[in-house]
Picture 1 (spheres, rainbow, N blue to C red):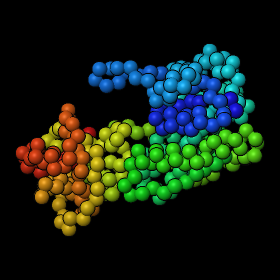
Picture 2 (cartoon, helix red, strand yellow):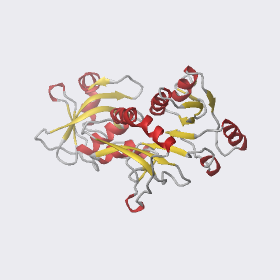
Picture 3 (tube, rainbow, N blue to C red):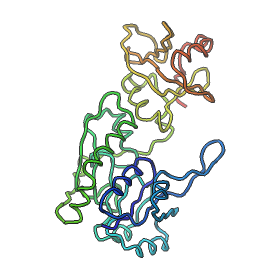
Picture 4 (cartoon, one colour):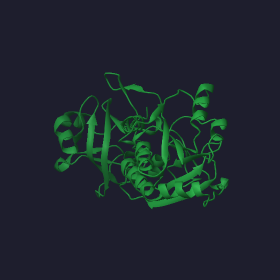
Length: 316
């Protein structure tokens, strides 16, 4: 098949690489416009753009797919399929209807659970036992189209966003090319989703990122750190200073303290939670500083810890 690939982050680029190793031909790539990032506001290419450049594939980076010239350019390519993976822009109806085999989205959940922008993050935060990817035909509704295939794996207690992404890439390494072959041969059918089972995964914004020591249990806090720390930065406040918590695990201390109370016994940075359990912080970062171990954080900020006694409980 002649394919236009639409995607932006590393997760999408890894899928593009799978397709490039197959017999199918990627004629062009759609990816989001270059963005400035970092302190120096350096322009960075998306991972999908970089992969396309490395393989000599033409690149389109429109601000919107609703522009008439974009439609005209895509139509002139005459694709058999548009394959979408974490692209980030809405695809209008006339583009959905353009390719012979339509537009297929690789969605990072077992649909209809976790439709929307952040399915992996919400699956981790909710403690789902079974997770996976769906190969679905795109429709005008958000992730509402019929599903061709779903491939499943288990979510372990300390899986992070990174490890879940790797699991899903491994699933596509195993199944994506055969799916494309079957789609081309017409030997595969899709099935409508059960609307009664649909759930939604909203985009991650700042309201998800602060740890609620009073409202969340220790396992909920661990899940939030696992889901969000690497990409967004889960945080709390200590003496008014923002502190990012990058890695932690649940422990049973046998002692009860107020939520947010910090213990530094035996060089271990332990924080107590509302459910009479606690977490051991293994990697942490004071605002404006580098990531350090819990032990090194104690050494550097013992006076601040002793002065305040606990992380701030006010949600900001």
